[in-house]
Length: 130
Image (cartoon, rainbow, N blue to C red; front, side):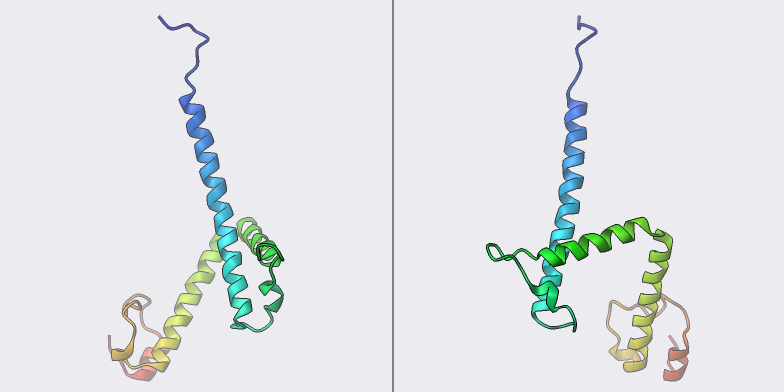
């Protein structure tokens, strides 16, 4: 018969594992994004990002890029998530409009389905009926 004061520790271990997994996942998201920003800045792909291309002397860690990445993540978490989702929708629609105005129907990439967003003025300008 088990004593009343004995406690199973597996629940605590599972909870600690979930916290550790969440923390390291968030940490790698910030570090990975900062490394990408550092690479973009070093290759001069986007003007004005040269500050984020700098790294520490010893291990070349992107300190400034980590700080701005963390700030962007915090701002996006504290802002209205629905507004961010609708902004992403407009980005996708704009991407589709650019493809439709620059390419014919046969030249569209396979990852842009023709029926996804409905009819747009660019479709009418191209004379395409899909």
